[in-house]
Length: 248
Image (cartoon, rainbow, N blue to C red; front, side, top):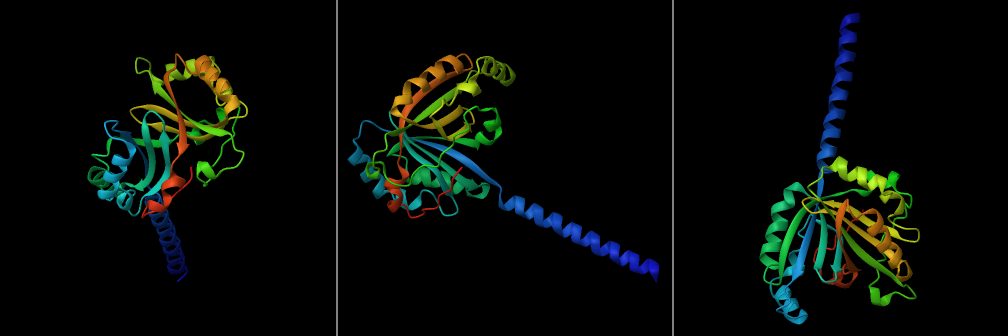
C-alpha cells in the first residue's frame, strides 16, 4: 500500500511538471514574434499628391499593417522615404508581403529586412544609456521642442568578421562616445543584410557632437549614412484600420 501511494505521488508530480513544461512551451510559441524593417522608397517621378492617390485607391492604409501585426516605428527618413518597423508572428509573414505587393507597389519601391533589437544586448556597454519613447503628438503640435531625430545607418564592412569589427569599436571607444551626452537612443536595431540602424533624439545643438562621435569612433568599423527623420505615425494613425502599436 505504501509503495502504491508513493507511486501515485510520483505520477502526480511528473504530470504537473510535464504540464508546466507544456505551458511554458506554449507561452514561448505565443511570444514568438519577429521584427521586419520595410523601406518604402519614394518614386520622385511622381509628386506626393499623386503617390497619396495611388495609396488611397489601392487600400494601403486599410491593409498595412494586417490584423495581428503591430507597428513599432513608422518614420519618414528624409532623402530615402518611409521606414516602417513591424512586429509580427511568423505566421503573418505572407500577409505582410501580400499587403505590400497589393497596396504599396506602384506608390513605392520596397525593400524588406528581418530585424532584431540590439539595444538590450549592448546597453551595458554604453556610457550614455539614455533611451526615450517618442511623443505621440504630431510634430506640428509640439510646443517649444527643438528635438530632432536622426537615423544613422552603420553598414558592416564584410571584408572583416564581427570579432575584428568589435575590436575596432572597442579600441576607438565607440560605446563610450555614441550616443554623446544630451542625446538619447530611440531604437538600436540590427537590420540583417544591411547593418545596424540607430535612431537618435537630440537637440539641434548636439548635431555636431553626434557627427564627431560617428567620425571618430564608428568610421573604420562601419560605413555610415545619416538622415534627418521625423515620426510619421501620429500623422497617419487615424488613416490606419489596424492601429496596433508596440514600443521597444
